[in-house]
Every structure is written in C-alpha cells, then in structure tokens.
Image (tube, rainbow, N blue to C red; front, side, top):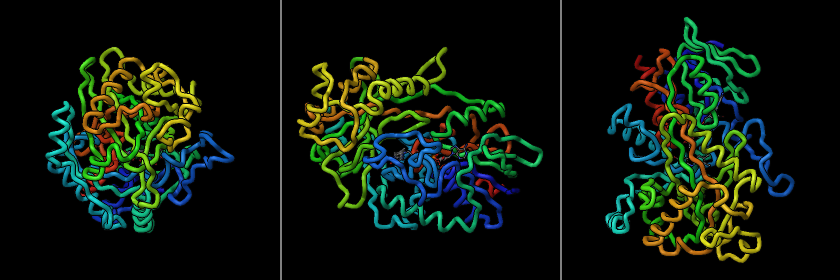
Length: 456
Ligand SMILES: Cc1cc2nc3c(=O)[nH]c(=O)nc-3n(C[C@H](O)[C@H](O)[C@H](O)COP(=O)(O)OP(=O)(O)OC[C@H]3O[C@@H](n4cnc5c(N)ncnc54)[C@H](O)[C@@H]3O)c2cc1C
C-alpha cells in the first residue's frame, strides 16, 4: 500500500487536508487511515434502557471515526485568532483568518448554506460586560448545529471517497521514518507507505502522539489543562446574549487568585452530554439548528486555566486525576445545584427533582466540592456571581453544575511555520499538535499543510 500522502485520522484536520490536496493535485495517491468507523456506522451503544452508561467500547463512537471528535458536536466554527488555537503564531494572523474563512466556504457549499453566521461585535453587550469586569472576546461564529454538521460531513465524504482511499477500523500503532518517506504499521499488522505523512489524531490520540514523538525524537512540551464545570440554566437567562451573539466567549480574572476563568462552548437551548476520553468520562454539550429539537435550557462550560511550571510536566495527568475522582464518586459525571454547592451540601435525587431546572443529562447528584480543588471551585463560584450581573439568574439556587469538564491540551509538538516536524515530510496538525483546539483551527491547519505539500 504505497501512497504519495498518508493521513492518519479522519477528523476535521485529516478531512480538510485530504479535501485540499485532492482539489489542488488530483493525481496524488492519498490514503486516509482512521481508527474509528465510517460516519453512518458511528452509533454510541448507550440507549438509556439496555445500556445506560459508558461501556468503554474499543473505539468510542462519539470521539472516533469519520468527522473525528467534532462529528456530533454543535458544529460551531469560530473564525477568530482570539481562541480555538494558536495557528496564527505559525502562519500569521491574516492568513489564519483567511484559512478559516476558506473552511467556512467549504462548509457552506457542502450543505451548510442555510446556517447562520453570528458576530460577537456588539458594542452594547461589550460595554455591559466591561462595566462588570468581564471581557467579551471578538469572533465570528458559524453555527452548523449537530444536524447540519452531520450533513456537511456526509457530503464531504461522498465527494472524497472516490478521490482518496479510506481505511476505517484501522489504528496506526507505529510510524517509522524510511529513506522513501514514512512507513505506518497498523494494530492488525498492515503496512502503509507514504512519501509524506500528516498526523491528525486529535485529542483522543494524544498519548499515542507522545509515544510517536518520543520514538522519532521530536520535541514536545506540555503545561496547560483547563478544569471546570458545565453550567445549565433556563435559556431565558442568557437569551439576550445568545439571541444576538449565539456564543459569548467571556473572560474574567478572579479577585481572589487572579486566575483566568472563561465561558466556553455555549449551547443555547441545547443538551448536556457525556464525553469519553481514553476511558475517562467528562461532560460536554451541544445543540441543534433544527428548532424542533430545542430544549428549554442553555448550557456552557466555565473553565479555569491551569499553567504549570517546573518540575511538573504532565498537566493532562492532573486533569485526568480530577476527572477520575468524579468518576469514582459518581460513576461518571456528577450534577449539583448551585444553591447546594454554596450551602455545602450534596445534591440528592430529591433536590434535583424539586429543582425548577430539569437536567438534560442523567448524571449522578453529588457534591462537586469533593472533586474540584478549592482554588478552581472558588474561581468558578466567583465567575458565576460576576456573570449574574450581565445575565441575572445565573447565580440562582437551581442553576445546575455538572462536573467535571476538562479541556485537555495536547502537548505542544515542535513544528515549523508549515507545521512540519524536525522529521522532513512529517506534518502534525489539528488538536494532536497542540497548535489547535477547535473545529475551525484544526480544519484550517489541514488546508494550510495540504497547500504546502502540493506547492512542494
Ligand atoms: C462533544 C464535543 C463537542 C465539541 N464542539 C465543538 C464546537 O462546537 N466547536 C469547536 O470548534 N470545537 C468543538 N469541539 C472540539 C473539536 O471537535 C476538535 O477541536 C476537533 O474535532 C479537532 O479536530 P482534529 O482533526 O484535530 O481531531 P479529531 O476530531 O479528534 O480527530 C482525530 C481522529 O483521529 C483518529 N485517530 C486517533 N488516533 C489514531 C490512530 N492511532 N490511528 C488512526 N486513527 C486515529 C480518531 O479516531 C479521530 O477520528 C468539540 C469536541 C467534542 C468532543
């Protein structure tokens, strides 16, 4: 199996690098190798009746397969350099935005044409935030919604399947450098040869990526993890912000610890969901574009950024330990009413049932203060009171907090401005590079590298 280009991972990074390489040079022989299933076979076995919680499948249908971790996501493509990754540090600010705009044009020409593009540029809301020491970040956001995102992926696959060879259920174990390029060995012993290789294995492939970097002597660095909770409250509380901006990315520096807390992944009228990363269950959220699937609640994450310094190096292990603690106490995700947290009491089934907010995720009622360290917990509480000033009702007793939400950052792989590693012809893109942590940045990094390879 000999190719000009082998791409590991069929998430947004892998898909868009394949798309752009096929478009620019149709003569290229390209293989896309993916550990998970094709899109239509991606079905999580949790049905709420026979299987109620995660059974740790060998490859997670939510995280792995065509479309990657973003396949069932809210499909929010943020066009900005202010969050979602640091691609601009490699390619320059203007080019990074151009690449994201280009990705947007592909999405809208493959099924997303009717979706809405929001802008965070609202002077009145910005002023109101600033008056309360909250900082609204600048972004345009294309909201595909989980439903349209799926259609766009389907259309992209239909277009690419005859132009490149797709290998599903194929996990690459080893990447070896050879005289002719790269040799990839799968867990079933298949061998793929490629003159050039793009690795785009996302967050779920982070541990594997570290192993590959070690074996190829590529330098890496890891020092950040974000920890927090997912907040769920009546949609009306945030409606004045979400109707206008869809997603408001708000940053706050806490008075007590001077830590940065931010809102993240806001899902108006959405649902809270489980997320499984390497067997650890954390919380996430999404929403649908189709009004018939709206819920009465809005959810978003509140995350505290943790940067570590010497001698500690494994920031992800810190995040995983906290997530494991919640899994140990709650058997998965824990839910607590804000009022219970403030009074120092656990939430119980009865208290959640009496609440005016109906949870959209079946989580275990418990006590998040037994899981989240005091510093991060105090930061989150302070942020909730700060948000209450711009969205009164946020600090209500019945506001639900799900924990833990962990935003793992892949270690930063040392790459140059073309996202090429010290091994020539080996490119690391998307979330597994540490350069990106969003759909738009991951996709844009794929386009950037494909253009560079085709130019070469
Ligand atoms: C529930 C959820 C909601 C999200 N919502 C949003 C959102 O609205 N907006 C946003 O910007 N971001 C969102 N994100 C983040 C976004 O999905 C990621 O940033 C994005 O998918 C990263 O793309 P990627 O191609 O780098 O990696 P991934 O999408 O993670 O894809 C990597 C692929 O590589 C495969 N793989 C891994 N290891 C191997 C191996 N050894 N061999 C072969 N294949 C392998 C995996 O199976 C996977 O399919 C969300 C994430 C989740 C989980």
